[in-house]
Amino acid sequence: MESPTTPNPLSLDLYDQPGHLIRRAQQIAALLFREVLGPDVTPVQYAILRMLQESPGIDQVTLARLVALDNSTTADIAARLESKGWIHRELLPRRQRRLSLTTEGEAMLAAFVPNVYELQQRMLSALEPEEQAEFKRLLRKFVQLHDSTEAGEQAVING
Figure (cartoon, rainbow, N blue to C red):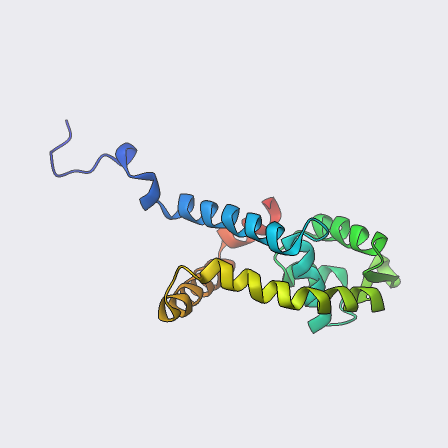
């Protein structure tokens, strides 16, 4: 029999569980992303475009690692971005691909900048400036600490 002081793990408040809160935060962020940037680009596509802007000419496997996606998903997204005319994929020896933004892709990213600032403002506006900085710091710390673990690696593989 449970003692009165032993918490029942099945009665935990859902909104005290980090996993649930992270999932809800991701749902809210994805909804806001679509509202602000529209249906033409997804958050993952935007991450890939930004990484290609920061590291032009990187290979697809390196890109996958940098944006925390598996190679297959990255290849699928890269193919979609190429069909939109936003990136160019160059075939290298050993079936690797080098990726770079096209002129149209660079223009799209430039057009997204004001919307991305609006998105960040909308996501964080409910928090005080100090809370915004702390929230982002803790999220970065959480991701960095778990990226190097088996759970972080499995999260990339399993999406």
